[in-house]
Image (tube, rainbow, N blue to C red; front, side, top):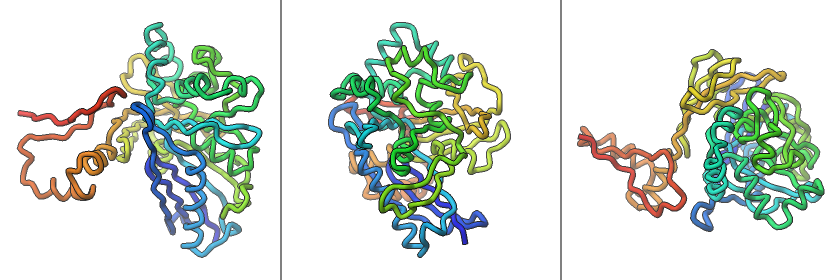
Length: 363
């Protein structure tokens, strides 16, 4: 029986899942991952650990099912968005750590562009607001702060990408440097009208196009897994997408107006808007690519709450108010009413904030 395997690379866990030829979920393996915060505003992963964890969940899934790579027809990858990794094209090794989506060290770069009046230009071209959690400010920061980074870029030795780019490069033995359209649309470098990297934005951020991946469809043959010793060696990689785009498509939201909500580390509402790009200046929400198939793009609208499951972890690990996250539901379900006391996650915390108690008493 042929199987399809998917790797879901989240912000707090990596999962490998298998589906049979009828589309039924038949296996799952998971490994938790952690980011760390060496300085205020910094949020990092170890790229080698991310790759090793991907191999681990793949091995566990195959062992649980008792199958071999020859029984797997293809691999798909969905990934947390906005985490950026730099690596050496010659050795394949990461240069520095991965900057996670909630890393704010590039805030001053964004503030400078804001003061120079570029926020509206960026919104118009990309559909996204000027903010440090997107890839462009992170890449600029890394080019300016990693030793020899700009010299490596000039010599053609440096590559950048988000999680799926890093994984595909590593899994294919360095033969494929790509980024799908849904990830590209989140970089602040992607022209939503033209569907390609924007030359003016690249100059604005000071990023040479040579360090960036080629933009590809969400569903296409991207190469074959060649990583030595990988449990899925020889399996073709057939699809890549951001986690939110994969959820939108996977939930069957195929008609404009269909929407889905994801509740995880972040909380996201994504609504399919269709094949026509809207005027970003009048929307009040972000506009992004829902998917690209055979070169044809479909668009979506999105709003995000930056603290979802992360807020529950804060109650547990930082404040010690609960012993386990499941106690939140138990406690709230046991109350006949909440006496108008609400825990409301803020839209986002500034990096210099030492503490904020996001509780409002509503009368």
